[in-house]
Image (tube, rainbow, N blue to C red; front, side):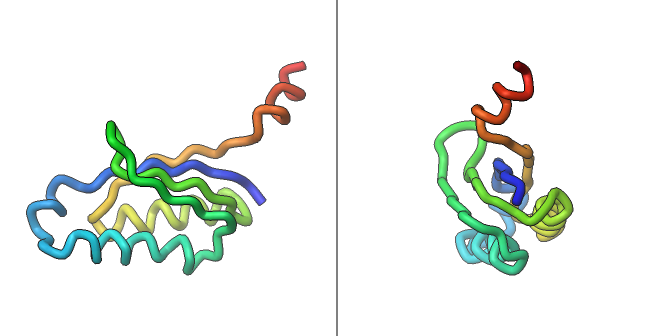
Length: 94
């Protein structure tokens, strides 16, 4: 399993077009469940991003599939980062 952080922002056009924005966002986020991610934690934030998702996926291709699917729905825009625990990183750099 690989770990990822996905930052999501609500598309400004979606705010204007959809009166049921909460429902539209929920439908977009269903892609996490459909792609069987593990340990999904979803947070709403105050700042540059509206939502932050932390999850584990079988591989990077699944994370790409989720991000692309969410972006294609036009409600949310994503930025996704693969991450590793700091302890693993510190071993890599010696």
